[in-house]
Length: 462
Image (cartoon, rainbow, N blue to C red; front, top):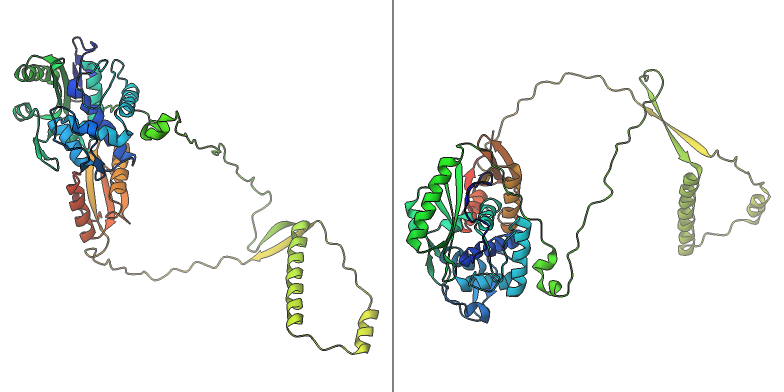
């Protein structure tokens, strides 16, 4: 299968829908779900993973993990992507879903959401197992999703060597990567039942090609065939094409990320926003001539509201008077005063109308006086929060905003107080964090680079 990665157009295919053993091409899905889990906050790159007996017992290729050992997730990802370590892949699956079976279920649901119609996964590593099958077309689709859905992690697949915590691992296909111009991944696979498999990608200028081979007779034969397919793809692909990124698979229900809940048959709750405003109500214009210099504002007040306010005020006054009386009893009034008060006739107030009109006079606007011009001197920005960091340029605003959000969640302490900004350039959309001090921007960039995120400092924009 040969595919134009920019558009998903198939440039060449032969037996592309034949179900075969994918071998370690499976690990592309294992890593894709791991990236997805990191993005959703289910797990982090620095989460310590406890190696299970199942993971430690996997046959080679392996990292050499021991049962009960703790190792950070980032090292497992490197070992699975670069060395194609089976023990690392199993440890990743169990850490995310709780068991190999639950992780395989999540793999299959993700594959279905991607449109991989002829693929069934049974494990996280790809070793031969009854029913564990895929096709060249489906693996090409998966490779395209890995490239475009998680570009920040794609560099894992082109590293010739990588630090996997307990060992330095070497890429399983570094010979082809070194010899083919533009080659930058993706994944090899080999078992006796599958033969020599490879999903490869290369970029030259604006063109990116994905080629997939199943069932090669040897590493050399497989690499030679991939080279032929790649050359065919670059010859047939247009030099310019609008990138149509694949739609990320629909968000899995929370039960997939929670094995305990999944075992009970539960499903995640989907919350939808309701009560959206469907129309805007505008007040009618007031009839009449132009308003005079002094405008009367008339407010209609309901009688019941007035009574409640007055009653509350009276109750407060009575309560205050009683409190004062208890604290200090007043002297008794003379008898003649009491008699005079008792004989005073009660005055009945007139009944208030049901509606009261409150008239408020608004003063005429003050005349405008030209102020003296004010001279403003710009203070130097070298010591303030006028610096930022750039974490890449992307093909769409959506991709840039998604990366900014993900990086902000992973580096909350370093990027606290910064502003996320997407700036459109001629070559794409820049993802920037602004509002940092020079020291803060430098620290943030160094920390991001240590985590494998491309980053550079930028000054305040004029």
